[in-house]
Length: 284
Image (tube, rainbow, N blue to C red; front, side, top):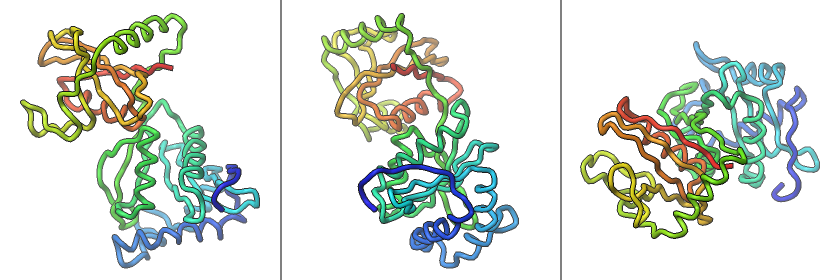
């Protein structure tokens, strides 16, 4: 099934055998975590059985299937519009994961409210196939939130928050052009590489490369701060505006070459405590 055109359509009752077969492709990963899959499929006092779940999603038109040219199942995603959650997501081992996964996740996100937080649970398997799910969530701006249990199986919860404003007004172009000029004419100094601890707060580990623009001046007297991500294009396409109540100041931080997931990490860093809050402004 790899390669070729991918289309997405609603799942209907005739697709239930395909949905069950797709779910069973993931049984090997669930068995890494629990030996008995009874609760996983039959439900418990708080969760309905998988068969009833499929019927519910189909009746509510909340389940979508990626298919190839022969209507073969490449993957399925289901949502809860009332809870603003993605409740099922699987891509067949026979499909190209990136192609089918991207198509499904984009389709699902269009069907729920992106102005509110969106969550998804992922089993905690460390297999390469499950890691592809986590990488895809990161690409779409989801970040790890917490650990929990779903139908008796350990899961990680990932959340996507509406954490930024868009600036696609013509009047904003001068702002971004001025920042482009500033970056182009300055050397980026990375003095706190990804994975390093903060010099004064060793419990804080930098999730991305962090530094400043040499020869510039920010509110604290140092250079203008920069978060530098993994996107090799190195585009400046977002800024964080921060208010720090402990220092009683406000400053701007440039995001250069940051993926959607990295933007989410930066946003979280600057909103973890009651003393620091920030908004992320995206360039469009």
